[in-house]
Image (cartoon, rainbow, N blue to C red; front, side, top):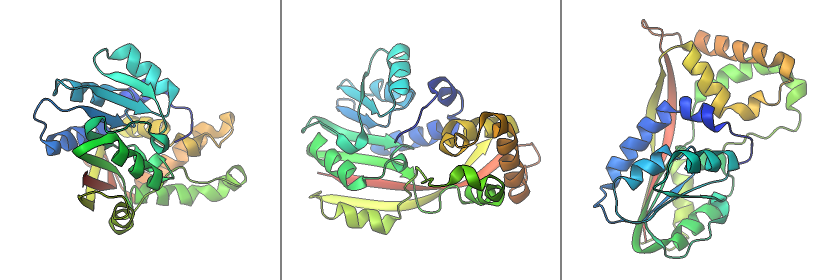
Length: 254
């Protein structure tokens, strides 16, 4: 989950993630007294939304110090802490563990799941949604089309994302002692209102690829990536950009 996030930019260009988060919150069915942990809280807006739905303690954690600083400055009700999802340090503290559009940035999901199990109270539950196998396939296809011209900048590069399948995640969960668990892949569509919004999303959440490019070539690289994507997936009649995404939704009970 490394890298330098720009919290202001993320807040401005994460509308798609926010829509999914609201859907996920509705799926929890909160009663209003739960203590909640939000893993990968980002700019804090979803954590703050959760805090409006319960009288219990709400804590947001994120690996990025920039995100945590922004969240603390912007929202006063939840508690925010910088913490690696792969090294959670809570013990039977929460009724609900929540995470949206974050955990695909981490590599060690065995450690994440163990940390969630430890953080949950007995009979607690978790609901997580992250990028799953096949996520953003056409975005990657467009990227790979332009990469030969930039190959020198990607020597030794490792993708920051880990996109699990439902079967591999259920296999992982089966070893952790949950009383019930389920993982499923859900196709979703992300829509950006225009090319500028699409570019903002690329620059905000795909920055590990863009950061490999020298400053003087970044604009050309981004524009080539956008052009390749639009050739694969043309704009609709309103000029909107549509992106096929695959989400892995995981639910567990302790």
